[in-house]
Amino acid sequence: MEVPATLSVDPKRPIRRLFAEWESRGAVVSDSAEAAEAGVAALKRHRTELKRYIRSNPVFQHSFEPISAVDAPAIAARMAEAAEKAGVGPMAAVAGALADLAVEAMLEAGAKVAVVEDGGEVALASDRPIDIALQAGETTLSKWFGFRISQFPIGVATSSGVYSHAFSFGDAEAVTIFAGDAALADAAATAACNIVFGSDIEAAVKRGVERALSISGVEGVFVLYRGVTGTGGCLPEIIRVDPNGGVETG
Image (cartoon, rainbow, N blue to C red):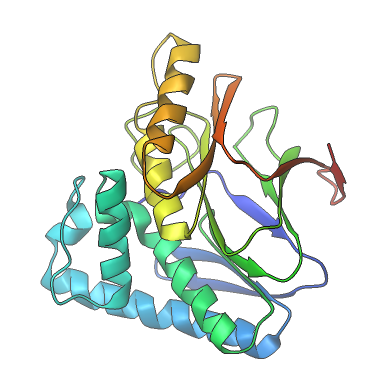
């Protein structure tokens, strides 16, 4: 599991509910209080189901390789599917999969804006643009730029080998992935970040971008490694973010 450089969500006039459920920490944002509560409830329910599944299948939690989810709840099945595509262990997709399921519950409850951020992995569905800001520890770019999301649904995930308590084989400050769902984005960010290391910085960044784009379903990638950036695929509009709260296009 990667819980790295956090993405802060800045929709217009939101209803926000913070949550803390076992290892999950984040926020649910919506235009509807009922939908926001449905999102929080979904996070708790699916997290409980996953904990129960792991107790019976501990290898699911500890594997660094894809592993099938047999007779599994929806959360574990989604994690396993995303991990298979990215070639990583299923826990690399846990935060994103939880966010996806919570957003689905919010949409079923009538939300027009449904955003769930779980430890830096974000699932979004909205009838209006949403701005997200990249936070990557103490790097120069952190909190100063982000992306304006206008195509939905979408999943956004960031993995870091520097600013994360989660294990990573790589050393990138941030690898941000845009994909059709947050579970895949989460797993793909881990896979790409794992190979961004070494003294040849430009080659490392290129490897990360190419690895990300080799994963079916990944739409775009941004890599930051030792001050060098690389992008690939189709990225949302890049915006400049005022750390004091304002956002301007750039």
